[in-house]
Length: 143
Image (cartoon, rainbow, N blue to C red):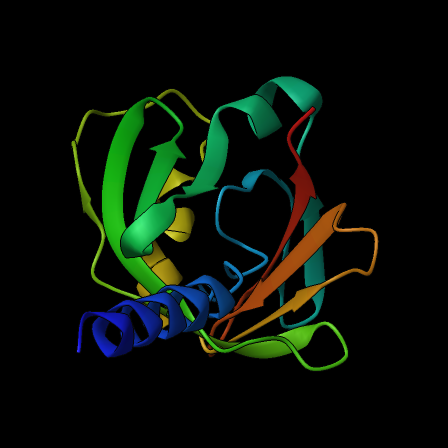
């Protein structure tokens, strides 16, 4: 009887060793700075100092940290696994501080990411594009 219990216990240990945690989402742990904003018919390219003041950090367990120029924000995020680099993205409402930042500032537009619908991640993971209903944000990987 003891032998059967040992064999069963060993089999369970082997089975547990075969089960692995799922791979994290490609966005998890990544950090990005805003490079361009596209609206219908126009595009704005941010200078490197402005890029550093407008950032996203995709944390574990769906936590998103945003630098909205002189304000900081938090939100939740979830995304489907990318197919050919693209997928669906959901960003929860952005809670942020509300200081008046010097112009030019794109923090208010970036806070509108809660309207995000899709994302595209380049194969080398150096560029992230997030589209909302009316805006397309292009981010560069943080150095």
